Length: 420
Image (cartoon, rainbow, N blue to C red; front, side):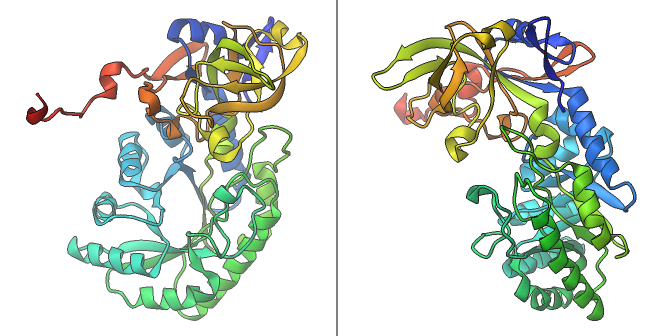
């Protein structure tokens, strides 16, 4: 459920007509619903109320400071994958004691900053990384708390680009090598082993892969305990899917019901890293139709949003529902069209071969389910300023990121003297 719905013939976000937002801020722009974000976080958090747990929001899905602050105020931590995300999380007020640092390529500087901040733990992706973290920890006189990311070789049945738990993935340590790696890590003087981590992919629409993965991880935990390695945290990652089109993903409570029997008696704190399931359907991208172009074999609707604003359709072939802001416009005769942007690439599209009510130039459209992996993956390609982000709460419009200017595009660039 989200707070984008038609009222009085037009699309609203909570108590604000989206057309008003577009009129005041221009298009394209991202719009988020505060009520939806809070409800989605609480649904996830409360589903696991009977198990000691930490929800660490996967900020790669949406790293706006206001969104992170909202999450922190609700009790969330953060799943980070870079020094920049660490900086953002701390700036937004996320407690360091609830920050988990993931990712396959942590630099020495990033590791050092995270140790100085005293984050909860690092998710370790390789043997080489264990040694690197031990070395950095020794240089700053600290012990690094770690969890090894186990690759359970479970098919998450999702898009190959967001499948992360199979043998061919760059992520994690193979399950059959895990015990050996844990033993090696336990011998290092500046490593404190505290957990086991497994994350098998994103946009999962079935709980079965979670259960299959967890069974392997629980068996490993039992083995580790027998070796005297004291595991305190079990990190199951994130990955629960949302509805973009016709998917029927499980609810957080469904996931909790499926895995609780496996974890409730382990005496561990459960760590979860949801991202998309919280923010995905809490945001939209608003755009305006510029032109209609009748090609020989296709009709194109050219809009002012592009692949640099929302790259998911170009990158993954991802589906996003396109809705008119004017409900009556959605009742016109339908026509098969491509919704494309102004960027100079054939891959610049938001929808292909989509049967939509006839769209006229000047009309406003909402690209739905754009709250996750939307603005956070935006770029300045074709020297296009990045668009504003807006948070709606209690009928008020809060600009949480201003639209970039042309001056912003050249910030930090210098023409050397020899070119003067």
